[in-house]
Image: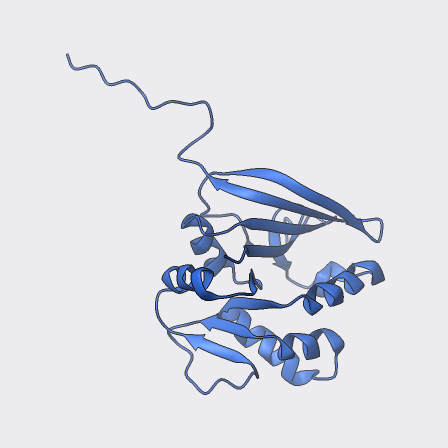
Length: 198
């Protein structure tokens, strides 16, 4: 059964992007960019929602020769959406219009390749909440974007315990953290309140 990994890049205060800032907060150094290219070479199926699809397919159409977008275009991709229609313009992309969690559970039974999300905050939140995520990986960029930050990643998540699998530093400033997630019913060590009939 393949692993499903949720993959995010975040500011230190947990935002996916920030108004007025350049991509990767202007900190995409050569070591990190080389790692992205190497990661793309590992065979996997990329999962995304409609918003990420529209954004990334637009970037790929504008810069088809850019290595990162060329590699992403060549990868097999699945987009979950009730608003998009076939045929999709981005090569190697399959559209799934039904329930994303059920579709991913089925993919984990039949798909030989690893599964990885790309952006897609709502999709990742649903998959984590359903308990089908095997690994959770973030690359933390050393910026705080409290005034301009957009798309807070962890809002609406359940309580999750994260067991550290690996860490790595890129370009002396970006921190990769990879975890195995476990969904919790509540804070650890807190039992349900006792009810006394009176």
